[in-house]
Image (tube, rainbow, N blue to C red; front, side):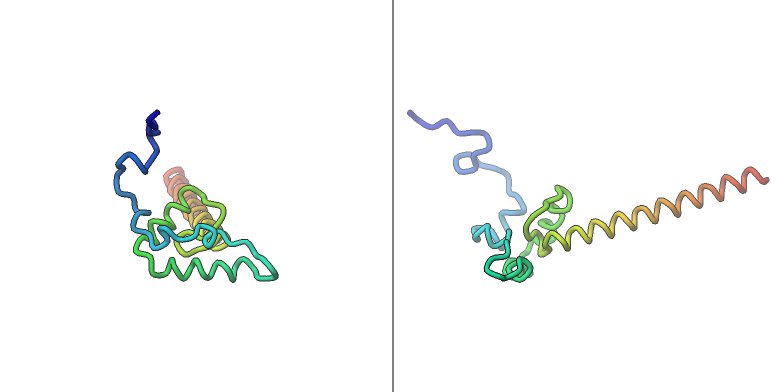
Length: 117
């Protein structure tokens, strides 16, 4: 009986070009990008191998954008490991909160000036 292709089956159906098609890691061993410390070697050391591939990748920014947008919790994405991406997100949250406070203070100042006048 012939196999009926599933809509997400990329082996039998054509699909639009995706940024990951141009990734340097395409076809590489996936486990290299999800290091787990083994035999006394910390995962951060093993992540260096994956990061070395990311350095020369033409779609590194798109990969990192994907990881940050979809909150990829594990692995090396766009040249950054989990901790580095968490730091980036933390910094962005702090900057956004600082900006919101600044805007609130400006609004409050403008409202006070209007009330006093």
